Each structure stands twice: as structure tokens, then as C-alpha cells.
Image (cartoon, rainbow, N blue to C red):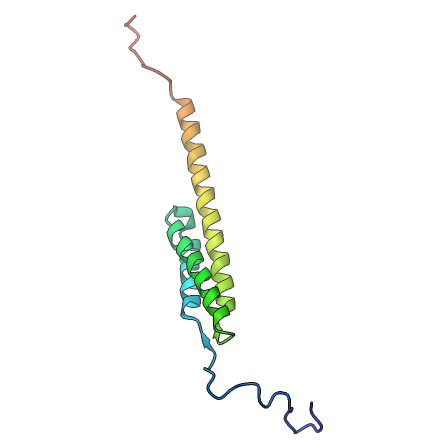
Length: 122
């Protein structure tokens, strides 16, 4: 509660203990972002499934660590963006796999089935 414009609020004066650590960005948050971006960029080339999966696993660990730290680990925005890009990369992988399967089925449907004997053979 503030009584004058220049005074500091009494409620904010003693919130932080002097031995509390300074807030720091989680190192896994940056890794999740980088792996999610890599998964997004290589998603159409099937290889994006590996970095996207690793990004999602690291994101789970980073969220647990951030929750356990009591607010001293930051980087939630990096985690969200990295997860979104990882999921988008996985969707691109699924789309490319479905496209390859459809193209393979269509090509196989156009080829003759069975043995193709020459015309002079009974």
C-alpha cells in the first residue's frame, strides 16, 4: 500500500529472501527451441521426426524443472514456441509419409500384376 507517489509499497519490500537465487533462463528452453526449429525445417524430409521428438521430450523435462524451481527458471515462451514448431514438424512428417504411400500405391496400381510373358508364348 502506497501513501505518496514517491514511496515504495510496504507489501513489495520483503517478498524476496536474500539467499534466493536470481531468475535464470532454462538452458533446455533454448535447446527445445532449436530442436523444434530443426524439426520444422526438416519435417518434409522425414528426418524431422528425430529432432521434433527430442524437442518434445526435453520440453517435458524443462517444464518439470521450471515448476520445481518455484519460478526461478524462466523461458516459458521459448518452450511454447519450440513445442509448437516440433508438433508442426511431426505433422509435416506425417503428411510426407502419407503422400509417399499414396504415390507408391498409385504407381503399383498401374503396373501389370503377375508374369509378363512375351507375345509368342502360350
